[in-house]
Length: 157
Image (cartoon, rainbow, N blue to C red; front, side, top):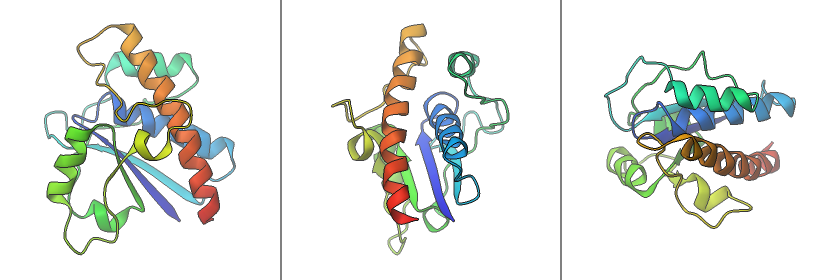
């Protein structure tokens, strides 16, 4: 079983979007029994809450269901439980590096930097304080990077 964790700040916009997108890609690829997907935030503000309604609405328009997801905070143990710990931006990468145990078998990485195929951006921008275009951009970036991640995982299976 390969385990993937997507991480943003509050776990209500970007990381649950990536979670929902990648979960659907894994199901479509027939790999749901071989790949586990989860998401978390580096901050504790939204623990237990559903994804932001705007994230859920935009994701649904593209066929992704985020309704079962609930926010949680990333913890040091995640670095022992997951094969991929993927941050949405440099700030959250730094936050993850600060909680990553020295003996952890995995290090946090930037989702776009390692897996984007069509975009040059290193970070998935936070759409929280913006309009609809920001949520659509997140989906565009995440869909692209998740295709690259899926290709990487296929090599490991």
